[in-house]
Amino acid sequence: MNIVYLIGMLLAVFFVGFGIVVDLGADSWLNLDALKLFLDPASALIVLGGTFAVVVACYPKQVRSIVSHFRIMLHTKTFDPEKYIDELTELAQIARKNGLLALEERANQQEDPFFKQAIMLIVDATDPDRVRSILTNDIEQTSERHGEVIAMYERGSNAAPAFGMVGTLIGLIKMLFNLEAADMSSIGPNMGVALITTFYGSLLAHVLFNPIAANLAARDEEEVVCREIILEGIMAIQSGENPKFLRERLLTFMNQKQRDRGAGNGKKAKRGQGQNDQAQ
Image (cartoon, rainbow, N blue to C red; front, top):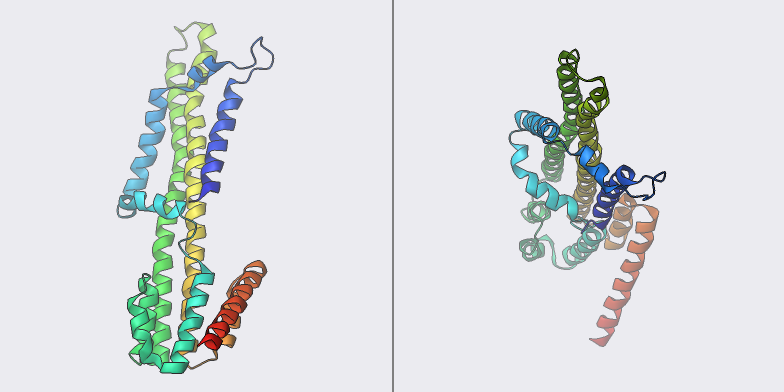
């Protein structure tokens, strides 16, 4: 679970709400009645309805999968490079010992369809250039589809403040047309109501759409890295590369902290395998 995202959203809502109700100059430093000033159904309808309409009009296919987007965003361990490196190292050892055909059983056990496809391509003795071409194209097309989803939320982030300004203009126009017959003391409150839509638009853009787009972009980067690891690992296995050198090469896709942890896990696995061999 992406706890950091949830904490960030809760803190954003808390600080905005706290900033609204805090009043240090009054007898009671919390003025909960101030929240009523920021509740305006018409303004919410303009911003939420207008933004949603633009997003649906621009991205009719992607908007159908909003629920799955949240599920992907809230899971942080969907793509773990260390897991793929360990698996590829193990596959390299099996291939060197028993040949590429021995990997077919392991391919059927894979939950990741890309990983399964990559293994089956070398099991079927596909030409190495064709294997690389197929897998590279798969990575590029997947990333492009992810980019369209990210662009949808970025579009929402741009549309929300725009509709906030539209709502503000509507409020100002109505106020100016009624200015001659209006009481001068009502200008301030009417101006405040007119500005609420701008507040809603900014809040929607920076608290909802921008964080979602950023988190989905991070998930896309993680998936691309893992698929590139699979691609390089599969090509190395097909060429018969030493599992030890393969692991060292795949670790270069990770940052230094992850490399140290991955190298440590590799040494533990190697020691455990050696102890099992001695026991046998």
